[in-house]
Image (tube, rainbow, N blue to C red; front, side, top):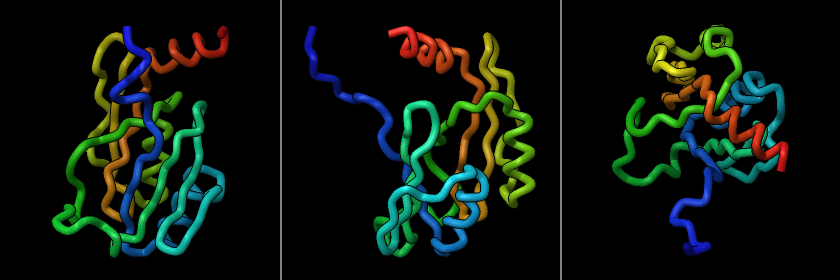
Length: 138
């Protein structure tokens, strides 16, 4: 078995925002933290159990042909309470994209479109909690 892995783990999820200052304020309020890294045109938050990174890039730097509205893959962040988190997101101005959906066997998903046009997925995921528990025991 090889020690080389094609995909080793999530490093940074990047969103685009036409108003980077507004996005910084909105995400800081949502997350309860300020970005840990900032350069002109880019901010980055480190969050969660594994300190994954959420980057927000000035949309002027989006690749040519990028979607200008909600599109593409949905990245789901584990949350302990999907309903409460969805309510918080909507109260901060996000629009519900997908209502909470029971996927069976301990999985519930939902998603919103943030005020900047990005899809933000949230999920209660029992496998995430199992991996977290295993990592704590190691």
